[in-house]
Each structure stands twice: as C-alpha cells, then as structure tokens.
Length: 347
Image 1: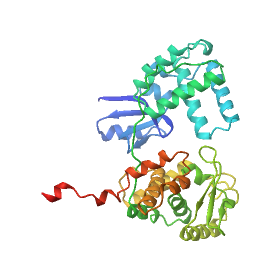
Image 2 (image 1 turned 90 degrees about the vertical axis):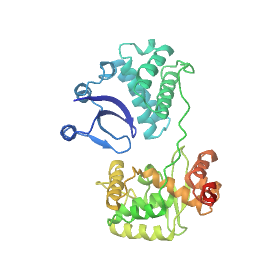
Image 3 (image 1 turned 180 degrees about the vertical axis):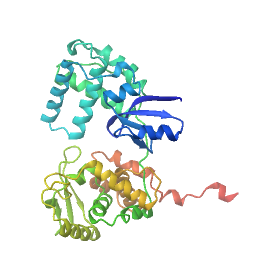
Image 4 (image 1 turned 135 degrees about the vertical axis):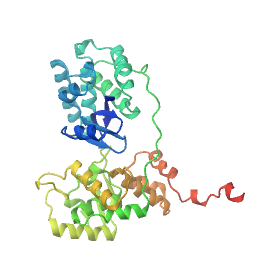
C-alpha cells in the first residue's frame, strides 16, 4: 500500500502528515494513534510530532530527536529572553519551536560555530523540501536572527536566503445567515455567549479568553480589551442584545477570575475546548466549510463595512496598527460587487 509522510506546520504546531489514497482499514489504523486528527482544510490525517511517531512513519533521520544538550539550553535561554521582554505567549511558543527545529537540524554543530551558510542549508534542505508555508518560513528565519542577535550576540546576514513574497490571501467571510445558524446552534448559554461575543465584537480567540468580568462596562455598553496584539488596549461597543446575553450568562455561571472560566475557576477557558465548541456548532448547523474562530472576526469586519461603517472606525474596533490591514476587507465586501452588471446580461 502506497503512503508517504512529512512534517507540516498546522495551527501553530509541528505535526506529522500521512498521505495515502482513501482506505478504510488504514484510516482505522491511523485513528488508533493518540492525537491523530483529520484536517478538513489540508485534506490529510496528521499526528503529534514525537520521537515514536517519527520513527513509525519513517520521518528522515535528519529530523529526529531533540537538539544537543547545548541546544536545549540555548532554546531555554531564548525562551526566558522572549518572556522577559513581554513577548506574547504565542510568539514565545512559535519562536522557541522554530529555534528548536533549527538546532535539531544542526545538532552535531556547537551553537557558536553556526554561520549564515548553515541557516541557508536549513532553509533549502528543511523548509523548502517540506513545503513549509511562506508565513511560517518568515517566522522561522526571524526567530533565528533574533536568537543569534540577542542571546549569542552574533549577527546573522540572512538576506541571501530565498524568501518568497507572502501569499496575498483574502479573509474568509460567512454570510449573516450562516453566522446566525452557528450562533443559534448551541443551547448551552456559555457556549452560545462565547461564540456570539467573538462575532459581535470582532474579538480574537485570545482576547475572548483573557477577558475578566471587570472588563465589561455595562453602564457605558463597552468592553475593554487589555494588552492585546501589539500590547495595545482598546474599547469595543457592546450591543444591547449581547449585553443581555452576558447578563444571563453571568447569573447562571457567576464567573470570578475570568469571564469564561475553565474547569477550575482560577483558569481561563481552554483554547482547544473553545475550538471544539465551534466545531460542534458547525456540525449542528450542517455548515460544511472549514470555519475557524477567526472567520467570525473577519465576518464582523466585512458586515460592518457592508452596512456603511467607515474603514477608520473598523480599524480601531479591530485593533489594527495599519489601515492597510483593514483595507483587505474591501476586497471581500460584496456590496459594491453586487451593483456591477455583467456584460453577459446584455447579450
């Protein structure tokens, strides 16, 4: 039976993707592996990246094991440095994983002997051969540059590395009817409120999970988003409808530390659990699209634009530093497009 495997970067994790023609028996065998998942977006089964799975699925030996002991210490130092400079949790995780991957690739080399040529070799032999996305490639290269400049006090000139231009993808947007189906799919008030708040305020996943009860200003109908992306605070208006939903939720759950608490009241709701809440809503509403939580944020911005809200206000509401980031929603808004008459209609 023909099959192949390779390392992929999926949802901020390194995973092992297994490719094969549809086979019921093989699918059942894959499911037996702990953490095995099907990606609707990539159309592939993927598993956790660990030593046992790498050996089982014959990932090339060059990518096996952890870095050398010196490399492990280097990754720890880099992690501490990033944390001390108040980089976000996601950035710390992404950058340290990127550095770890690089040092695994060159684990036979002392860190002090690594040069620009080794970075180029890693790019050609690992990044390009494994077809890693352009955005993650840039994150990896930036992480390596930052590590050597800060922790090793050594400048890496990586301009000669082949770094293709970033892909200009349009944001994925749902119709208002689809959003309504998703938000009405859950009867559980907590699940319903979390998804509704993301859409009604255009929140990022982390922004929702970091909310505290005191961040809701019910007298002014505002919500305070603290230290979000770029370490910025912003305020977003609360609609009367979502405010009533929040009040019902609060009466039912009485959150203390976090607005949406996990199993323990001193812990915020889990990211994966929140993704599962959306996944369940999609199943219940029979929506086949590979919707992510961020689609709700994109839909919020696009629907605001289509209703006539000025781009400058949308930029503030989303917390974008640059207006160019917000302008991408003009490319997916259908309001102007629907007014264009096709010459085909005149034939």
